[in-house]
Image (cartoon, rainbow, N blue to C red):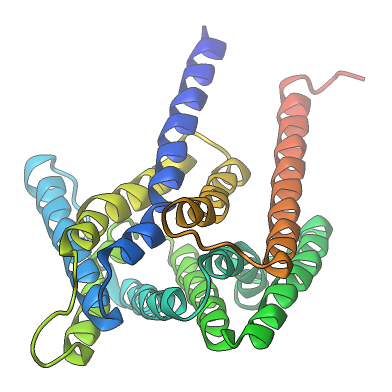
Length: 301
């Protein structure tokens, strides 16, 4: 009976986390579809996400009886600052380099997080993680080198900054041990303010605002909620693999809709990143399964 329950929980986790990864993969295509000025898009997208955070906070606290803070203390504010700056650099990267470059480089977030945890939390990565990091540095190097050749180095650099800032936010959240579920949504007010201050004086310049509103109100909150819920049902390596859906699918959507084809060097670097991450995640899952089996049958062998 317990095996059936565990299997049902695992299937639920796969469904929820898969939905989150799928929703996240539409972020860049929706930004591009809105066809607007970068600061205007940043302002409207972030303001919509902040509105969802307020609604979720009211529902959770007033109607469901869960006492959860929008921004829990100084740690929450610091993590939120990193999330906000990450949104800022992410939009700059989208407008200054190819979509494939953005999502492939941002996939390096998990390795940045491992380095920061090692430095600040004294959590030394396993040897397998260190090898994976070395391989991924090579893959990112290929993409950034291609950016230098094509004149999109600034966009690639902003993508690297986005990955680093997101890793900083994850590290702060892990160190604090507090519930940071609403922080990425609530602190979207920071990039919203920056976007409005830098947007054109005559008003927001967005040709199709419906697309960016749909992104900020539905897709981004849905992605964050599902991917944050996944660890309740799945192991961390399994959840991490679903983040790769954006890395794999976003360039495909852009290719289908906008006919933007990545260069061969970018595809090579992206393939190196994806294979390294998938290999690392599969290795971790097999290791976890072996540990679980040994705990279940401690006297076997």
